[in-house]
Image 1 (tube, rainbow over the protein chains, first blue to last red):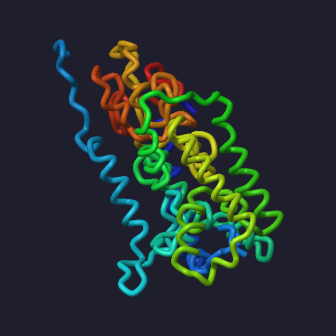
Image 2 (cartoon, each protein chain N blue to C red; image 1 turned 180 degrees about the horizontal axis):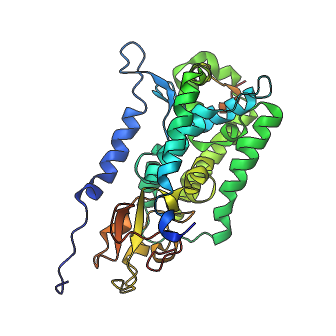
Length: 48
Length: 287
């Protein structure tokens, strides 16, 4: 890949990221994130 | 440039501190009874612990580790989390660290207590990659436990202190690990007075992930060697304690863009659309 093309590497990366994000959200992965977010991990903060 | 006249720099650079302060409140605006919003399903690209009683957004590092732990039971790649991190960092690189991260703000403020700061050896910049791979990926995969969270000083600050403070029922649960976490937090608080952004530079696994994209992101920094007078202004101004002439957009650069206020206009914020923007390896970029 030429140095000039490297300038635009952000674009396919951003599109890939958006595609993964949308597909992940579409398949319900947000629910898992919310479930973990709403369950206090007491062990993670040194409690219990 | 006329003698003594300071080149103009983008006006938004003046507002970085205000943006950082605003984000502390915006990311922690989930007040019980009259909360503003609850977006904990959104992995906001900054280290803001979701164990904080008022956390309004999700921590991407916590989410990633938990998702990797869940893969032990059902193998589902955390595409939503990875996608959000890749998309954001491909556009603004590691600017989240310099502009949006509450723990970065804390370190910036603590560093103001002293004028002179100690330097970290360059090899310490690689520790964060080891922590990302070891504590953030491999150990959660092997054990199902978010190990980076167990050591994270931001978690100690937001969760470890405020949860027992607000909920007395949790206080009997305090045990040795809590003291270890608080000890790590105190160590970084003290270190931040003497070393600029020690956690971001050497220990932040999230920053390590973002730094992989710094050099290829849409927004990046440009160093003009010809305009540089080696006055060292940027070195003194850098909140991350790096030499922007050599390490601009490098693994330890938090893309705060403070160096773009260079009195000689030798460092600029550019995008891929800018005419003079340099790609990795180009002459002219401080890499």
